[in-house]
Length: 219
Image 1 (cartoon, rainbow, N blue to C red):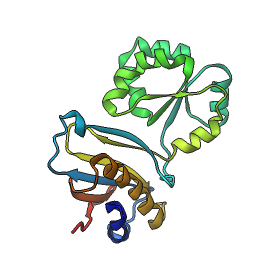
Image 2 (image 1 turned 180 degrees about the vertical axis):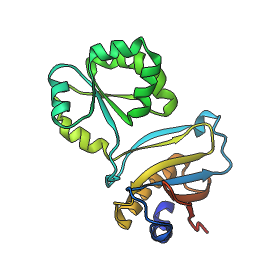
Image 3 (image 1 turned 45 degrees about the horizontal axis):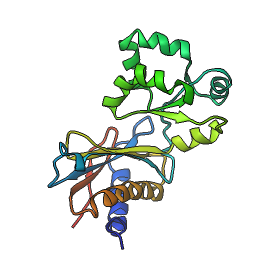
């Protein structure tokens, strides 16, 4: 049995405590999982981690998906309700204004790009996206954009950068406790595969946007 599976009852307990704790807010708060590591040096390449995880359940708090496209694909994106559709002309303008490029990089959680615009997108937005743990993602020709958008609503990026910890959104208050547990387990599976177990994990916390963290009882 994997170590992450054995944590399921403790996750249930922590999620229940988190959802019951603190005053109700006037908005749907995100729920994040914070994983703190021991005995790893994040400066060493073998401990670096950046992996996309498609959670079993949508966090029910939309990511800001931006689409870089021209022509029919741009029209399709707009018809599907994508608020930020960036065409080639807009890209060229962003290339002349680094401040605006950084603003776009902050605003967009996911950047989906028409394949023939990948090179210019990488040049213009790559320097602003990279430090934020984001990257342009290619859209294949004749893609079913609606399905892709639905899939990316479940995206979580599991990342170790400069500190020995991971902080990742696993859902929101609108998710059921069972959905939050399954999403948390999906993230823990990535950690377990990377480090051949969870022995390097020293602490796990769950936290609402405006709340105090709840610590899992690991042992």
